[in-house]
Amino acid sequence: MKKFSRKIAAATALIITATYCMTGCFNNTESTTDSGSSGGSSETVLKVGYTQEPSSFDPADFNVVASVMTGYDCYDTLLNFSKDGTTVEPGLAESWEQVDDTTYTYKIRQGVKFSDGSEMTMDDVLYSMNRVTSDNYFLSYLFANVDSFEADNDTWTLTVHLKQADSTWMYVPATSACCIVEKAVVEEQGESYGTIDGKTVGTGPYKLASWSSGSEIILEKNENWWGDPDTLDIDRIEYYIIEDESSLALAAKGGQIDFVEGMSNNVMNVYESCESFSILSCEGTTSNYIAFNTASGPFSDEWARKAVAYCIDRSQITQTIGGNYTKQSAVVPMTESMMYMDKDKWNEVVSESDVYTQDYGKVKECLEKSAYPDGFEFDYYTSANTRKQAELLKSMVDESGSITMNIVEVPASDTFSYLFGYKTDDNGDRCYDAMGTYMMSDFLDPIGMLGLIYSGSNACEGGMNESLWVNQEADDFLSKSYLTTDNSEKMNYYTEAYKIYADAVPYLGLYSSSDVYAINKKFTYEPSCMFWYNFSYADIHLAE
Image 1: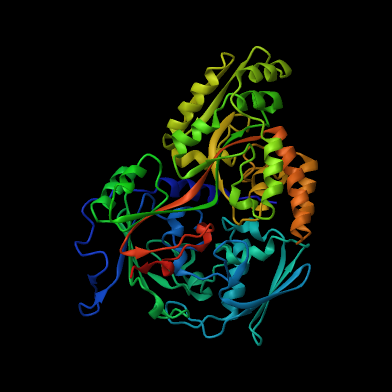
Image 2: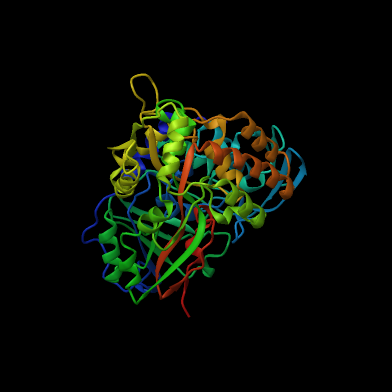
């Protein structure tokens, strides 16, 4: 189902390393008042710090958190996720209807303007939808089941025709794949659109005011926003790029930063010691895990995978690496927040399936059943960012006395190129035997994670099945889940597939991460489990 271009993989890798140290570029004004360009009038400024810089403000490149923190607010999507992530709500589409199993209609708002003052037309909406597939977005896979889009200029209606029934389509209009761009501007700008030297035009609450690569990005209120700019508490966002997370934490403690997202356990104590900050958290959809390469090497043997799984003390990994804002994962990487359909049934299936606790006796039993009764060694790929976790895993594996784990450190910029199969060995095979990674689901429905990393159709170059494991029986269960909107039926398909995944162990879940925020107490914010698509500075308010 998914096939990504080399261009996208390269862009993803670039974003990971496009971070720079910031020195002396903070304004010396207070966080909540600043003398802006409008005659010295007082305005509310939010200073945001993060370790990455977006590659562009084009929705086609919205594939890392740096884009969430900068670009999303420049655009609107057709729909929005509800606060709890289980349903969708109006966006640029004020209403919608599922006409039949394969047809959806969306009534588009009239009178919406882009940030440059131009009126949004149905032609812009249709162009934005078609561009996702024609230009090969990072999220183009969400449109894999789309047959065609149709726009009615008279009734302001967008009709979506699907190739077959797909119960997940209801969520797609709330993802960034459905950001609406201005056709004339994008076509005129070409490859420059959304870059530091090009234009960025959208219908969102904020607009890009300036971008100094490696230092800061400034967003300002969009005076043409259809949602009413007067309702926004934040007038200007100053986004500072600070590569080193310790330096970022100290900047926050020193009062130079008001808002930070995604702090690691390494610096959490610095933020927690800031009396002027609140620490907020919300369980999202991010799972951290080990991906075993099942296509070649020792982990093509199921018992070899099980042997390593029994070496790992996941509770220690969670506690030492993840910290207080994480939970130990089950063997199948999926957060508890995604088990909302029937938590009791999920808990039952998980408890029955997840048998892996550290047990070197079972390691020996698994090896005796494998092709490697005397043990084996394997290469575990990691980056400097996850080196500490890799070293802890190595100590656990090596203690078995039969299995040896070799750590291979690769540049962070190459991580996804290895995982998605763009970097291979001389034989064209994946280089890693195993690799530590993470994934964030596009929506709370379990298919958002299960379909992404386990589906056989994704076991290809550019696909997100990093284990390359394929099981037709499990794929059939997932295929059936797409055809029903009945949650009880879905649950039956999901849990049957889950049991197969847990038994085969192509992945070993380690821990799930909550979305964590540090925010100056001058401001308030209520997190959503769908941070990846729901985050907006419009939801940050001045404290009373």
